[in-house]
Image (cartoon, rainbow, N blue to C red; front, side, top):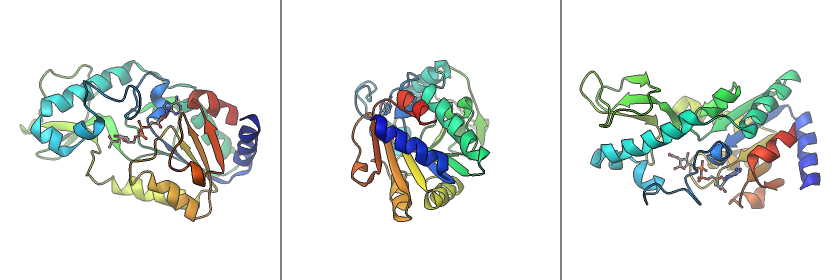
Length: 243
Ligand code: OAD
């Protein structure tokens, strides 16, 4: 892996435009469980069963219990060496006048805490609540949240401000993510199983526009065949070595 790492580090030093897509794997070393693979289930439910508008309509209490559990883990967690390395990479690229965009599928806010700046959050933010009735949003960092699903002042149920399966992505964030992927000389996919669309499609957008692709993940992904660099292992160990 040493030589592959070395060539990617050199390429990143010369790149004027870099886009990164992160997934749950980058926060695994902070103690936040990923969605797929070992530890991906909560009380035998998969995320596909819980992270949907239908599940929330059917059983808001169950869905809130799951989010409350994740909020508790995230509140206790800290950004790890992988998050910090990406914030460092952004500074390194800014110093030479380059562009850096960090697109994340994560809702945990650990990239913000690590000091990253240009973040595009495709799947929302777990600390935002949104009323299903009037649409009002509020920031709420209370842990644990109420035993019953929280309610808006209008009486409507509050839901987590995240994107669920079957829902559209936030338009502006998505538009900027596509733009950054099209402009990228190097596109790094980190800690993502790369099976959830449209997010995973950014790798196709980047590749078609001529980017070189690097995959940093604990296990193989569907994009390995297209990758110019494949680094298999823990993001928290690999990413600091790219600076
Ligand atoms: P997944 O849980 O699908 O994939 C996480 C990936 O990270 C797996 O391929 C792991 O092998 C890898 N991994 C685990 N630990 C790692 C480590 N320390 N370093 C590097 N890689 C590691 O998570 P996502 O791809 O983020 O969406 O999932 C995408 C979306 O599906 C999520 O945003 C969420 C989920 O359901 C919604 O809730 C809408």
